[in-house]
Image (cartoon, rainbow, N blue to C red):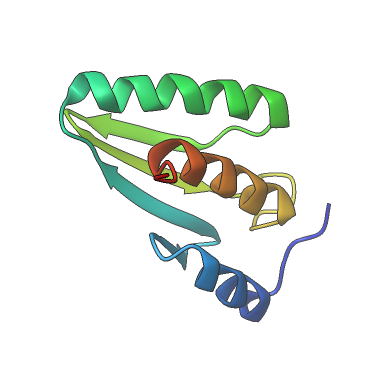
Length: 97
């Protein structure tokens, strides 16, 4: 898996308005109604991480989840990070019907 160029990362981030690129990773912060909802989202995200065999650096304080994605093998952002970001977005921002 090859590291993406900064210009490619910035282009892709146009599809992910909640995410920013800095320090060789893409970062997002999500706020939930309460701790239970935040932890529930983290649990669902954990299953996606295992399925993709890609794991974030993340933390949560009460109802806020902070996530950083990078591919450690290449010390930067790859397609794998964007696949996981897409899965995370689907969990934390469900499409309304």
